Length: 244
Image (tube, rainbow, N blue to C red; front, side):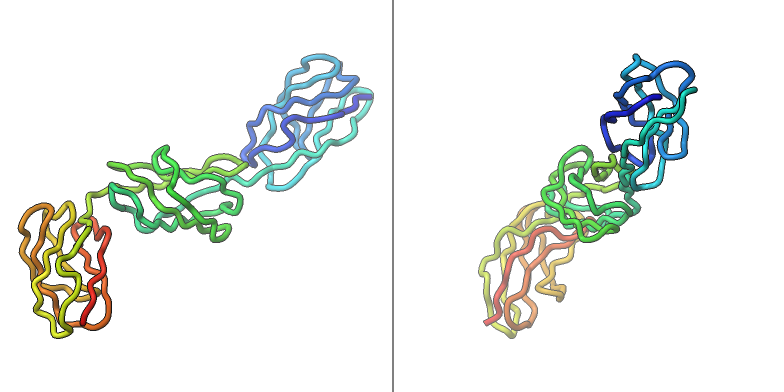
């Protein structure tokens, strides 16, 4: 009667397809290899080794057995691992400079160990739940595919578009009267195309001096607010402005 001593690897994706080496004794003659109740294809390498292809199965553990004319072997545990799946990315675009916080939704995300933007690792990511991950995009260009990887395999992908967004790097002056109407020089990058300049949530009038400079008129306000420049692709980095 056949006897199994080990299976290697002892786990694989629930989609199946993993090549599993089964070692033991008494392998010979007409044989059937099963993962749980499911028979699968295999190669009889020797009387002590079989190479089998794991069929698909439900997430969890099953017993691998070998049966021949003399009977069925003992069972050895094989674990089916969840394959992560992505269904969405919000927002679906971000700055070519990276740094965009992207919320990924899907299933089977609890054990994710890596997030990739077109093959480039995310700057950082946090697994929020089995259905959500929050990732920070790396620098990139064009349209890329976001994927996540877990012990069970790599997910399907969702698209992410890198766009050029205006970034604010400095203000002069960085403060002004609460009554507003202070002239502020905004320096940064990518000041081209249709733009909106905001002091906090308030849009204001401005003049585009060049691709790296804008002259804006501060609206009335209180406290400290962030000054941002928004283009078709959204707003990039912002800088604090304090109302006196």
